[in-house]
Image (tube, rainbow, N blue to C red; front, side, top):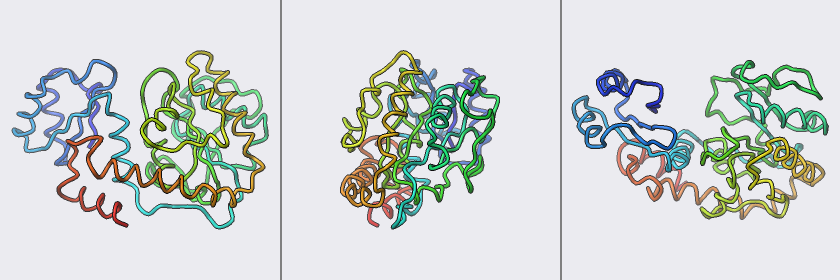
Length: 292
């Protein structure tokens, strides 16, 4: 279970009451932002002993590693691609945010929605007040995807070459979630609209990005969200007329490298050594994935 401290009182008694009523034996405790966990770590350890649960503290700087762990833990067989790939990309947008709405609006302007797989706001349409210019103000749905299938991999992955990832945040926060790790796990090329330098960060971690297709100048833009989004759309337009199945074969080594590196980092415990990988069902699942 993942507990967000921000949603609970900083009163330690309230936190203890909250955690002691959970059914799970393992609890991940994360405090978002820069302040860190507002309790002494020794107190947290003692709390775990009192309530009979293992409490693992996730520091903000390690949060993207935590999502990598969750992605591998929750994912099953790699979806892969069909032998014949008909679409350029899939772009999944669960919650409606200004930059996602703008992105989809520009997709409509460039006629990129009909011939690709694009969803927008399956959760709450009131999330932002963006006024669409090139499409109707209503959600976009993809068959087989809804708010109950958080970890369900869409069938459209098989029929599209790229993933266009719209991360949770687009500005300065260093934040990588399952939205990025899922395409890597499922051996897909990707381009990320997210925090400053997010594509380069993955490269620095050893993952391959796709500079043969995309100019990543947009990756370092911090101001003017509209310009950044437009630059991403320009990059996506460039790959609409590729021979998708042929390109998939050409990218095989890169995609295998990325997938294997993700599994290796998670299963070795290199990124988050305190997570319970070496024991129990976590180890069984992760090691099975690693050796399969």
